[in-house]
Length: 115
Image 1 (cartoon, rainbow, N blue to C red):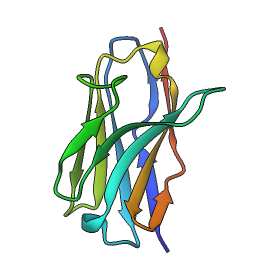
Image 2 (cartoon, helix red, strand yellow):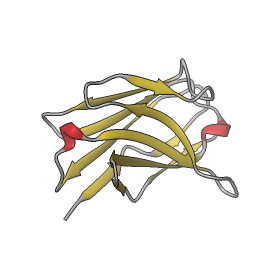
Image 3 (spheres, rainbow, N blue to C red):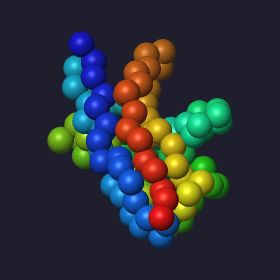
């Protein structure tokens, strides 16, 4: 049974930082492409960052230079370091695992940026 379990969300002040984690089990993590998505209230789910099995990363313009995606293939864990957070970053954040044609979603972790 595949599980993706996100953690690290919470309430943070504007300008602050958070690091999200996504622990994967039940799959061969090192062979999967991984992504972080988010979905704000009343908004569509958007992809934030993508990382290949070997660690090459691509970012959405909205987070480029502020967020960093990384992975530890020994710990089966995906990370998202988020800096310079602002209220527009308030959303539920999801990790996503892809090895075509198979994909899996985590349950999400809420990030709220507010003073």
